[in-house]
Image 1 (tube, rainbow, N blue to C red):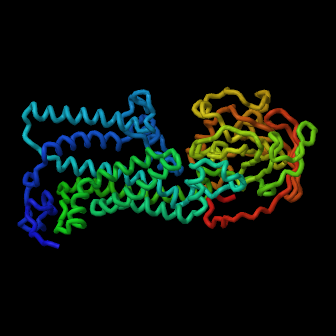
Image 2: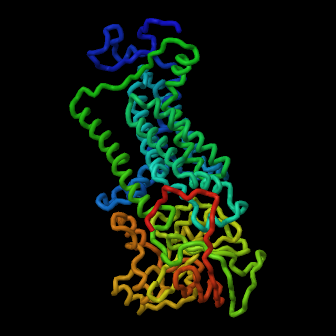
Length: 553
């Protein structure tokens, strides 16, 4: 390796004021290497573009931030602060009539940034302003980008470190035929069945984000972020995972942070030449500037590494956001064979091709009942998270599953042994319409007196299809988790639940001694009388049971 004595023209470490630097490289900002004209133009464009995509662009984000109850936080509160939409999107998410795979906002922002950068350049030339390199502006742009990337990827990483993003398969999923799973679901399950690998992925992401909080480790953090998220981008395209835009976002931010380092890394590792990189940063000589800088950095680290970890731990233990949080009836948990099935008093014999008879059923550890029937149903192509609080909207059990797999959330009146079940699948248009009175309340009449009585008893009236007496026995679902997991967000989301929703519902009584043999009787969602006999099956799976399960049931 050749050795060259560094001079001012070489890549040296220079600060605006540092009495400890050797005299040979003490120099004012004006003597740093001049930028070429194309570099000045590119910087102006990049400055506008990256500031636009690094700052929240939604008024709702700021409203949510101001409305946070900091003494009763939920994990999703800080997660949503860390994960926000960005860029200039006044044209919406379409441009020239095309979705462009979700990248339309980037294109809009890039076009506006290019126009802004060229106008900026034109103004400088028209006014014949003195030539100016943007070393200080470049420093602050990197600060904004690295903190944006660090906060965002740490929010993502904690959902893997304490694995809730890709849960271990439920009983219903384990009993689903492989060919009935979408590619996206197969990938999620491939990670979910090895939770310690998911933990490792979380460690990588959190480490990358933490390194970005510190100037001296930014390059290492950006390299780690680029490698980890670059793989996730490809995985999402290959498996149709649906979050390719957000993962691409971090790749783009990491690329900006590395743009100055790539030539130096090439020079050092490929050309094997002596290299001392420039690490210019402004002087913080005034005390208030130093204290402000340290205070903001410390607050950010405390909030997104300390508080967020604690909230995610509570989420993992008691309220995993893709799994329902409320425990199911303990007697009923497990997989069942449907040994007898009657519809309107007519026995339907077993046939794998029958489009009416249930094939098999499961009661999950939480309040979900599933069964399979040989009838196609619409696919849920969401990521399974749904509403972050209400269990009925946590659809990981049916997301990406075909083949007639049905999943119903239930409210259990264990005093009278009655289950009130509602379909976890809801048509997508209705998911965007949270107004009451949509219909689909199972045909039950509105009992205003019963509803008023239930309110007086303190029960939460989730829907008018459940009698007041049953609601009293069921209790308030919003409160049926560990007190540590109660939050202002959970209370608000449950309070905002619509009085009626467009869901299929049915009600059954259950009779059992020990859960091994269960008889269900009632009326299904199509108003048919059903009589179902379930016998528990001790199924053995090739998969090793998870040693890292979310939730306490």
